[in-house]
Image 1 (tube, rainbow, N blue to C red):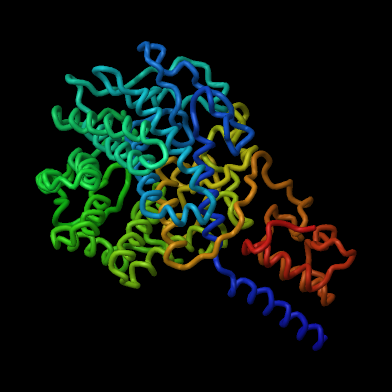
Image 2: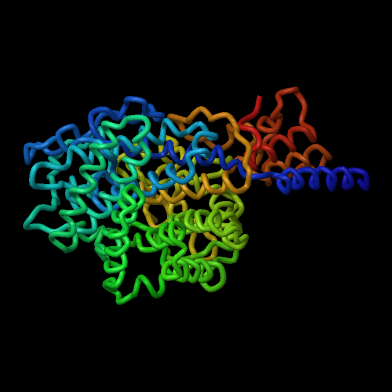
Length: 535
């Protein structure tokens, strides 16, 4: 027995060593994070170039009620409304990520896909502007949420619910979308100048619309903005980059004198982060990088220091800003931290970002990836109608999703690092186009500053989820997942300890007819993402 124990200890050490030396595959995570957007595409051309074979044409009559083609764009989250603020935000932050980290996008082999995704946003924005109006919300949120099923089968009429014109304000949406379109110009000017110039022309038009009639957009109860001036500042920042006209800096300094609805002073302190409702930190970060002006630098550095030292954190180290989609905030702040690290070289900013990104990937007490399809253990019940594939009937929507929602960042755990994989706990399981936007930038930034080597672009998973428990090679305890416990159980079996609930048929992971140390190590390597599968 002493020799068996020695062998077991050695095996256990090797298993855990394979985890200790594992480096996260940021390249793989980045590619998948961009893929996610294909799951939320809307319109008649959804199937074209889509990595998910379970998505197809939907909502092909959007805009028919007002006689305008308003098809295309992206569904907001697990629902199918096209909301203005998250659409403008996601396009803005994805565009910013490409602008700042194009070399890393090229390295990951994802530039073409990301530009295609951005173009879908841009072409939708271009269609949404008539001679007098800019339409920014398609679908009524409360009505949409009564439906649970694939978007391809949603047949009720979807109203052109919200728009801005000379008599109806929408400054926040107009400013944010103008910023996204200005970035579209910067990213496409060398490859398609005609399209880029169209985007820039519309960007200036929307910015002027927003300035001429200051007021809030209508996002129903779902997206109520707390400020409009941060969004005007966002657009003005990119016009300054394009034109070099200092009058935009003057305008921004004036805009940021206005407190938001809660009374916060943008040029004094900002403890929040970049999100659909607050582009202030994004503006200040870019201006600090461009100008070095202490007006901006002081606020950005105070924000980062707050996140590093003072913000509540979970026992596992996740900075905890808000319980609804906490990981979107951690990802967005990580993108900000990495951009500013590149400007200052201050190691603590890189360390903050890496700790949060690694937590999202697998370095957390739950031992799971919060990006679906990354690693080997992820959420099976994302709050997403298309991926779920069921209806409300008989509570079927609570079943594991029919389709793997590759690349989706789920909302995340509670303040004790506990994740509830329940489709009805949408604070934890919802996914959204704004969630993934900051994640894409953060992953590309990590690649840039950690020297992550290039790896081949993986083939996307397009249909089925994990096989049922008991029939999964590597899952020797039949719990439906492959993890470190399975590796250790194989090690115990190998030395003759006969662990309970052991399924030998699932243990021969190299299919050589025996169960041995190699099988245990292969399971450990699969668990940490070093291999994609077994024999």
